[in-house]
Amino acid sequence: MTAPLVTRVSRADAAAIGDAVRCLKAGGLVAFPTETVYGLGADATDGRAIARLYEAKGRPAFNPLIAHVADLAVARALARFEAEAEKLAAAFWPGPLTLVLPKTAGCPVAELATAGLDSIAVRVPHHPVAQKILAAFGRPIVAPSANRSGHVSPTTAAHVLADLRNRIDLIVDGGSTPVGVESTIVACLGEPTLLRPGGLPRDDIERVLKRPLAEPPAGIVPEDDAPLAPGMLASHYAPRTPLRLDAKRIAPGEALLAFGPTLADGSENAARVLNLSQRGELIEAAANLFSHLRALDAAGAKSIAVMPIPHDGLGEAINDRLARAAAPR
Ligand code: TXA
Ligand code: MG
Image 1 (tube, rainbow, N blue to C red):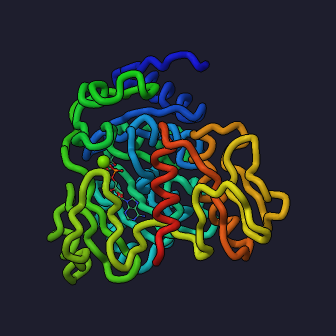
Image 2 (cartoon, rainbow, N blue to C red):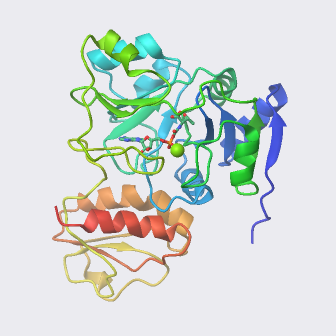
């Protein structure tokens, strides 16, 4: 048993920034103010910390997260900027704009944070507290809005505490957030597309681009916890190899995505075996999910058999993603 978590709340002074950085380095969860809303931060390179973050928010699905970075130079290690993305970053960063861009080959952000996608959402926040934490931490921080899944985004430390008390390590209280709505999200994966209206007005963006932003296809209503990847943007990661869920027997030549200490019958003839968590631990399984799927997809097997995974806790989100990945396309 781990000790019960008690959420600390600290006024945003130098000691609190130091505490936040130590906590992030140890794989902890830290809520902090940005100019838009409070974010719930975790080390973007730490898959287990990110799995814990999804668990704390109670998200029933792994929706991709925004990687927050200190400046454009750090962002370039994560994402590829073409001409229009360069223009937007130059005009509006730091500030309430998130860009969805192609991931770089060496992107250090954990697969779970981008939910296995080849794109990544990146933002340079303007808020001095967010800036100080990012500069002192020196790595990207993923931060969804710091609310329980299905609730509205928090604009004060009290809102965060009401939703996440004793589910996260620390809340850095920097007062109420000045913008009060989430960042505007623009995908630059082709024609620049407005994925979520937010704190930066569309007109400002269009003035810089000298053309209108494309609209996501009709019927897509951006919601707090819905994936915002419409139409030509793949909404979720799907392997090319067919997936067979709840497999109790493995056919010869199948690849096996295992879970737990006891492998399914027939596993000795599998083309390749990867275990999400030998200990049967759901946090570890979530952290490994997308990277293991990618590795098995590359094994050239006729199908990937997936052993049953419990549905409790993070198991719900893991099973949700597996069901989507298995859906016929
Ligand atoms: O203002 C904000 O953006 C706040 C502060 C904390 O920075 N963060 C925030 O994060 O609102 P979140 O997770 O609540 O909303 C981010 C949205 C999600 O709906 C997610 O689906 C979408 O961004 N998103 C992230 N990565 C994406 C990607 N690669 N493609 C499409 N949508 C993406
Ligand atoms: Mg949110």
